[in-house]
Image (cartoon, rainbow over all chains, first blue to last red; front, side):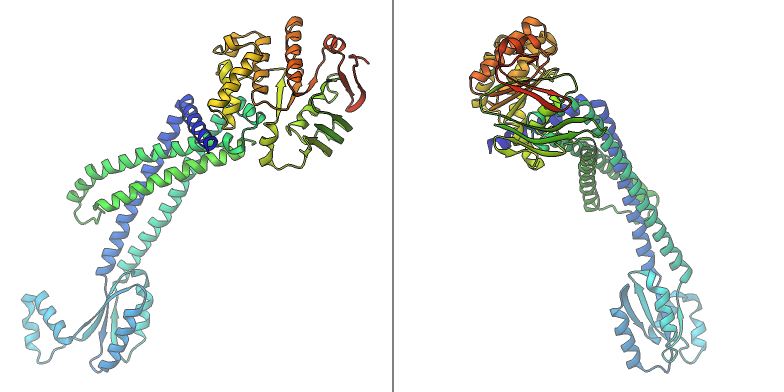
Length: 297
Length: 226
């Protein structure tokens, strides 16, 4: 037990000493990691905002299916119950002919006389869908159009929906590519820093091996060094993130008020925690790869 | 204590460093390993602490076949075999005491009890008063004595030395040999590869001569040339 504690103390001490001896490289790796993680965080925030926009606008883009006057009410109820179970469908609302008339009169107040001229209510009843996922809209619209006995027509703001879905897809793809690239860069920089650290201490490593140090005793300090670089870089990035959030986000929200920027504290807190974890993992993995490759123990 | 059975080692470039070598060294023996450069002495020493493995044959150290132990068991073997090199292999950034302590720290064995082992090892090699000096402040003989202190600090039962006097002058070489003899008298088995004719001829211990990877002579009380 004491031996294990001694080993732990030695490994930690050796890691700190190694970082200090290579402080220029250490600093460079920390800064690179921080920059990559800030970019990652910024991207995640932007992506989140875009997703929020897609969802928010998608909610507004209802599908409206106009019900034939001669459709059987029980059949309409049946279809509505079915629609409510579909994935991507948020809310299913039935708008009666009377409701439609009232909405028309409210919205086109100055033209309400047009209706008064008519004896009967010309507006059809309708089933309106509010979507959770606009992507399923086109298929759904086609299906409803097929039910000619029930619906006289189906209206979908198709172009808006399609554009939103494609923006959201592109941003997701670009974001994934960027995250992969940045993670690769950070991994490479950390792995390289550790490689140089291994090279600088090759004499020490050789002697340790010859006098019977275990593999993990030799590897341990390098893994800790990488993890430490990742952790410090991530902490810097998290601090930068919080500062940006406190300083910049309110300004943007003030200027462009319609942007649904995630301004709640829990979002930023979760993002900061996530960033720190990513830093830790990238640092440990980067150094482990390097140790495996350049440290023949 | 140390047994080689039909050991053959061929390096990737085709050099036959050891060719069907068999030998046995008993507990507490003091053995000189002689032969021209490139004869296979260093390879033989490296086999004993699993610094290299043979292509065929077996190497037993304390009744364990070290050619068959797993990677995880190699550190255990090396903690039983102290090694001394011609180039000392000291860490330049550490003092004499720290170099010796390093062995114990590398294995997590450094504590109040074992720090006394460090004192004893330094006293045995007569470096107690130089303990805080760094290697560059020491003479070659003192550096080699530091390396010896490091090799014996864990009280290894086996001590192997690869040309320990190769870089030392006449008088210092004798100091080093006297030290190894004392360590042997304290109970360690000592195997020393050397080119030092005078020492081998004077000491009259067991001599194993290798040439072209083969044992050509194994003689008790022998001289350098047989």
